Amino acid sequence: EAGVAQSPRYKIIEKRQSVAFWCNPISGHATLYWYQQILGQGPKLLIQFQNNGVVDDSQLPKDRFSAERLKGVDSTLKIQPAKLEDSAVYLCASSSGTHGYTFGSGTRLTVV
Amino acid sequence: KQEVTQIPAALSVPEGENLVLNCSFTDSAIYNLQWFRQDPGKGLTSLLLIQSSQREQTSGRLNASLDKSSGRSTLYIAASQPGDSATYLCAVRRNRDDKIIFGKGTRLHILP
Image 1 (cartoon, rainbow over the protein chains, first blue to last red):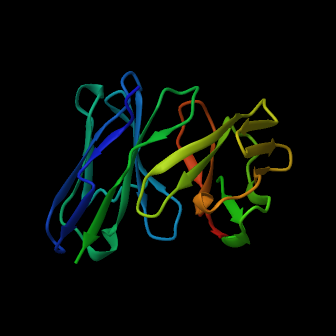
Image 2 (image 1 turned 90 degrees about the vertical axis):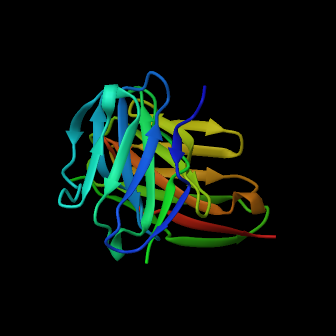
């Protein structure tokens, strides 16, 4: 089966600019997650979708971050405006519930 | 609130040695526990998934154990190789469709 696809792989932007990341989960996986991983830390959940509904966005900085999952498949994560502290790897994962998570390769964001 | 701790934070061992990575969690009411590998600048690769009813899982030179009552898991790597050098992350899940919570990882360096 195809894995979780993410794009772009790398992105460099200036602070106060906007950026968007895309994720295509494994076919049939109802649950999709976006994680933020700052260098030297474990990944931290930003938002969890079940189909196209939000299950948990308690740690999403809603003043600048937004995410959507149209039709319960692909998802986009947007940051507007970006801050220096948003520099991190953004990981998308999907799950079918019983089995574990499958992660994409991630997007490395550098804000300068 | 679930907290996951991994010890040690970093480890260097000569090639060929057997080694153990430790993971502890504060809430023993988990659904499953998953070990991941992360190479620098890359996404997460699932190594082993242990369901709450299981005691251990094996894959090749890797063996992971789970002791729910004590809140501990260990990842055993036999006959270590330079290619095993990576960060190893432990993550626990509370319910079937819940988010997973990560430790900060153990950075492993196998010396040729």
